[in-house]
Length: 148
Length: 160
Image (cartoon, rainbow over all chains, first blue to last red; front, side, top):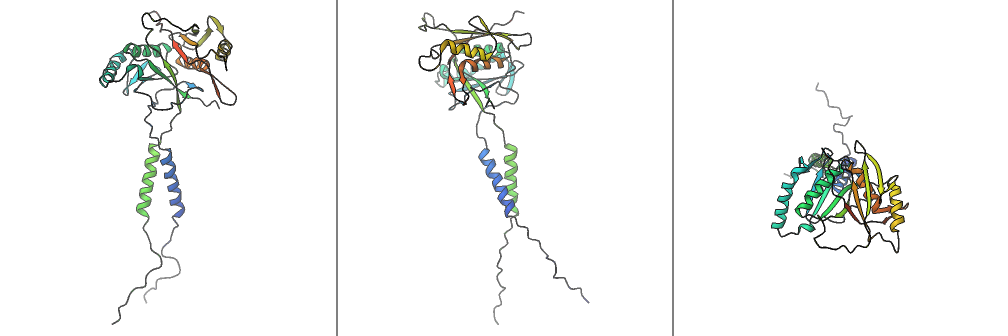
């Protein structure tokens, strides 16, 4: 005699997917809102000094050139570390490009992101090289300290 | 012969698998590209190389000279304001407030601070000095602005 298939237990278990889908969509929403489109240069090799008065920039800087000084005295320029003394040649290129585009060097902003442990003299040398090329406007960048 | 039809089911089964796949891929993408952005702020400084030849300064107030002295390993060993030793940055700020004042009649707008730092001094101290002279943070979090004109003395590379 053929064995009859039992009708007692369910052959298919229906899992309610709604809570999981809700949660995943909430996660996606969170990530979309926290997505950072900012193009700010933030090199993790640097440990910026902290200040309660460092004001977040109100708008994008005019013709920015970002120079990052590491604690060992090297400058990160275009992602590559190089000694402070060699920055002059690269700044000369920047200057030529800006002048070629009809921009005013005095209005260009040099953003100095220097490590808090670096020597002040190195920062000053860096600024001096920029001054010698005709740059006048500097921004010293620091990490905002909420003071909590 | 009568046309027999199967009765329509009450429930439509939608296959959720592709949607869940895509949603999880999106979550994975966002999680991997998530970057925690540190809030950064700026101190604006305008520093031309030097005054143009023949230019006469019409600033009646001489710059306040803040000297930062470095110890052997670059740590701060001393501070002075116009030659007078100062204990720390809080005292520097107090002395500066006494000098230029705050509120109406303040000379802060017209005063310039010149930072004269030892070459080996850790840069962190310079930012702390700039913070001290730039403004006073009140207990309620508001900031009373002090000096806006800040400049550096030329760097003095140690001999040898």
